Length: 58
Image 1 (cartoon, rainbow, N blue to C red):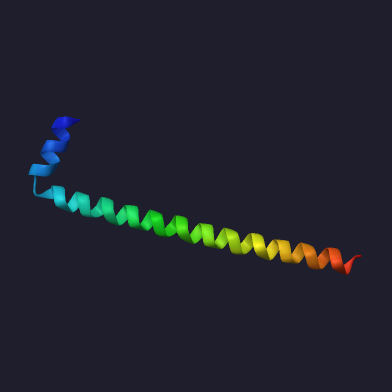
Image 2 (cartoon, rainbow, N blue to C red):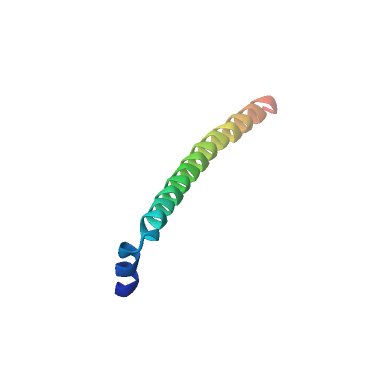
C-alpha cells in the first residue's frame, strides 16, 4: 500500500487521479444533499396529504 501511494505521488498521472477523486467526492456530496432535501420535502408532502385526508373523512 505504501509503495502504491509513493508511486501515485511520483507519477504524472497522480494529480489527475486526485482530481478525479475530488470530483467524485463533490458529486457524491451533491447527490446526498439533493436526496436529503428531496426526502424532507417528500415527507412533508405526504404528511400534508395525510392531514388533509384525515380532515376530509372526519
